[in-house]
Amino acid sequence: FLIMSQRKARIAVLGAGWWSQGWHLPHLSRHSEAEIVAIVEPNPHPRSAINELESTAALGERYGCPVFSSLADALASPLRLDGLLVCTSHARVAETAVCKNRRLHGWWRRPRRVLSALQVG
Image (cartoon, rainbow, N blue to C red):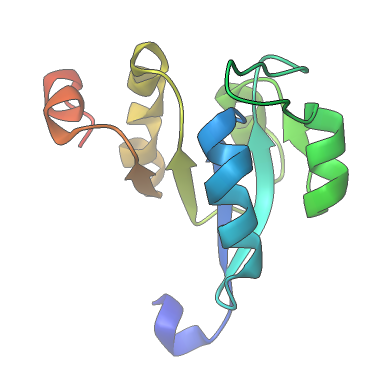
């Protein structure tokens, strides 16, 4: 169990849009009990109507972690992972059902009813 081992939780962030760049990644990077071990984003240059976003290459450099273009690629890598923070559109939430099969913890920022409909939550 994580609390007893006193190691940081190894978290991958799925999605590098406005919420991830503006909120989740900065806060997660400052959390003393978490480590960002991967960013998963298919678009190397995420866009937002709200503000300018960093490229995935810049994000990987900023947070010191690899960037993958798909969740399948991240899970196929030798990456050691405890959980997944899902910050994607509704259309991509279904691919995170793999969390159950891999015994990964998952945190979704989507409404519970969407997750229930997809049988992911």
